[in-house]
Length: 331
Image (cartoon, rainbow, N blue to C red; front, side, top):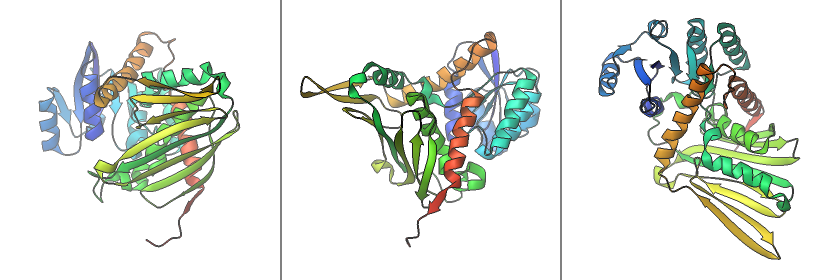
């Protein structure tokens, strides 16, 4: 039995805990949070036997095998470093940290302790993205990639004005907290690391990043805003080739479309998963955690979302953020 302790249990954190609790031979042993009454109620609702407002006590408990870092990004570094020093394996919500110095310190402590770690870049485990990645390789007749894009018109409902997401010192800003997911996704899909060349937007809720992929000699656009009503939330992405397109809708798509020319005609192929989005989402969290379990059982196993991969995504995000120009238009 692998015993897991979670630091943090917010909206996403509780989703992670409920997902992981379904994995055989995994016990949610303990959870830590700030509000004693809410913490107690949450722990009891999930039959978690141990809860405390002192996360340092929890991660030093000899019964704990794995620590889940599910707090806002500004505390990832301190928790991950302390957990590694206590010889605990780590499951860390993205981003890895808020600076490369912090990321390097986490990597150093994990390697020194000889423990294993994954970062929750779950898109790399998505069956549909695997199929999309293979379609790129299996359709050379579409020619070179000319452009890639991802547009995220997200809702801010549920995020009050005092929510940590809006505070750059806590979240790192939109490109660090959220945008890193998609830099990493397209880096993996295209096997090429994007280089930010321009960033625009309105703080704190909007960023548009232009990047260059040097290996394929193509540009990309990544747009994120968090100002839409929930009913109007929309996310879509794609890849334009010389003679074709691959497009998808949703940050966690359940289908994608391939269009290309064959024998003088445009043909369209659509690939679908007949699943519910939240079911797939939960499964991806489980796959990331199971990847960690494989590495714990077999030290030679390399996880798909390593600390080094997470560091690279953070590096791209920080570079994009550093060159941001704020719009001069008055609102």
